[in-house]
Image 1 (cartoon, rainbow, N blue to C red):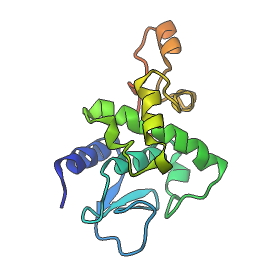
Image 2 (tube, helix red, strand yellow; image 1 turned 180 degrees about the vertical axis):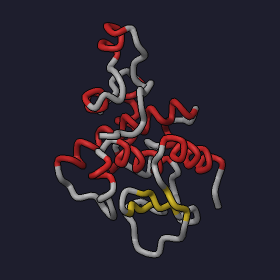
Image 3 (cartoon, rainbow, N blue to C red; image 1 turned 60 degrees about the horizontal axis):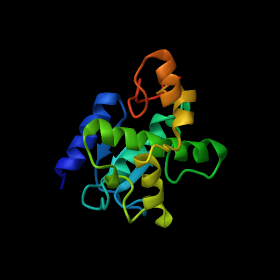
Length: 165
């Protein structure tokens, strides 16, 4: 069953151009109710335990180039590209929560991040947003000090949500 939070998130994904499909997932997945398939999120709303995980996984897709994105399926291998993407997905998903008016605890919930969710969320809530330098490097946002120099909005405001090159 699609909940209001899932509907908010999937509408956002549609708006920013990230593809998803709602369907039953039969194979085991790293996160309940979510799979990656050729750069598309597969969402099984009956098995989805934590809707915020959708934003985190979308963050992984959003921060890679389109040619890499379309190859992303199953569990992501522990290579530099995906390890750096993990940290940027933290920042991306936090910004998405703020943009959507959702509680960031939805993403950084007690069931995830190997018991580190409180610490990760604390970084964002106390002005230590990890992963933002990577998003800035990609041109997706600006750290506070650079935004002030350019007289523009800083993170968690995003210049664009999905990397195009």
